[in-house]
Image 1 (tube, rainbow, N blue to C red):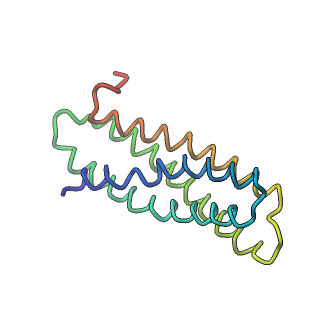
Image 2 (cartoon, rainbow, N blue to C red):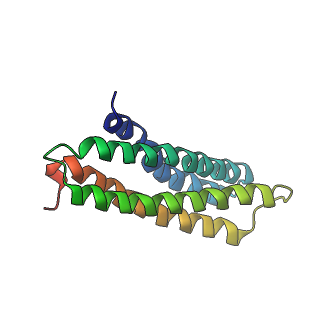
Length: 147
């Protein structure tokens, strides 16, 4: 297994995970279940941790692809910039979720403002991850490339 292969395998955790987190959070909010909300926050923390090796393997994959004639350096660079932004948002959301678990652990319920801000951040992150994934796919998949 090489770096591009490894990157393609693990990049699905944060991408698919964030969309599963949206569904999970909606159910948790509708049911008003503190337990589901807490598990949802730990899911975000897990995704934040999984995003780090995904990003690191992307750097290694880019180096491996740089020598291939069909891999566009411009597309690799665009994907890398989007991935940096997505990583930053994911880590901010991970810290936010962890802080919520710690700060509100003794309360019967999480403050509504905290839950809705978390959901908003998840939605923004999902859009960012989708864009990043699409840009990554365009590096080698000409059928989805815009140019």
